[in-house]
Image 1: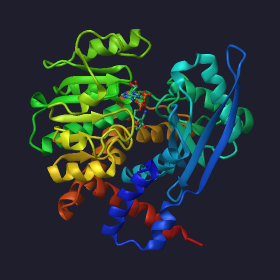
Image 2 (image 1 turned 120 degrees about the vertical axis):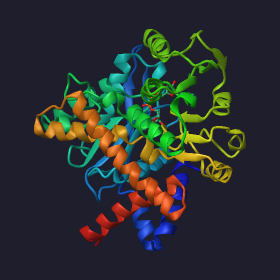
Image 3 (image 1 turned 90 degrees about the vertical axis):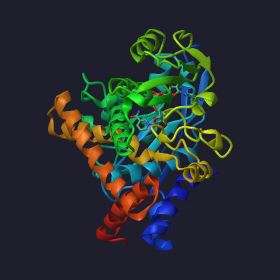
Length: 411
Ligand code: NAD
């Protein structure tokens, strides 16, 4: 199943519960705009290379469209389309006044110098600057991009349209960003994980955790859960997975990755296993925090964790979702679990518009409030209707987007 079909599958399951008409479903699922552009760049060695960039703007009924920008060699239009739609439901679940969008460039960032990365970013903005903006569509970091890339985006966009830091979020704190944005997605994952554990009657001290992906989201989630007394027994990145039954010292792993170009390659304080083995470990909690689609029909029967928190976008394929549901596995879905990033992005945009800066305590406090309120609404609906947390989250999101669409007048 293609990524966009997987999102639509979950959409329809919730739409059935909401008794949405076919016409309304088509309206809500159809992206407003899809852009594909050529990015021709001279590399450091003088070679000319051509990359393809995408921006899909899915829905703006609740506000300007919002979504990350992914630089990864596997990026394609369908993946971006699926992720843009996920953003629409995500911003609605946490009830921030945004629609959904997503962007990507098919490029392997590991092969790029900083100068090459900057040239690709600026060239991409040259191609799409007219369709993004603080009141239309606001990019943010995702896999393969970071605060520095966001700074280049602001600078390049402002060359065309004048000074306006609100065109992009996830910027460096010293350059119109906010404290707490980098940790926000991982912190949100942590906050909701601890809440779910307590509702399931599980003690953090008795919770062994495996986390796939040790980038922005995975590393901050690992740190938060460690501080909350969970035992993180496995972590991983593109170099492989690392397992230690007695628990991994996350401080050491963070320090190691920091000194090693953000890679765990060569980390010796744990045994080396594969990323596939990590997913199937005997743990109480599994957190996929890297790529989409990693839990599929084939490996789902072997997944032993009774709780999965989707820090990555779309890590569980629909066929696997059914298998896990039958086994009684509780899944905290991506559109709720990883919404901390877009929530703090919203805070950053609000502050950019007000030329005012909150301190870290206020950012964290507001983030925790937004995440826990959204969680409570989804959890209660799931209990009331005896449905999965995913279907409940989609129902909350679709309900809000649907009402805004109708209220604004469709034709
Ligand atoms: P990142 O680029 O900072 O980190 C990605 C991590 O995944 C790295 O450790 C990388 O080595 C690892 N990885 C890549 N390919 C892998 C593979 N084949 N097997 C195992 N590990 C692999 O990205 P991120 O920002 O942490 O994003 C991770 C996930 O979280 C993505 O699905 C992204 O869409 C989602 N997400 C991110 C944010 C955010 O604020 N950054 C918000 C919501 C959702």
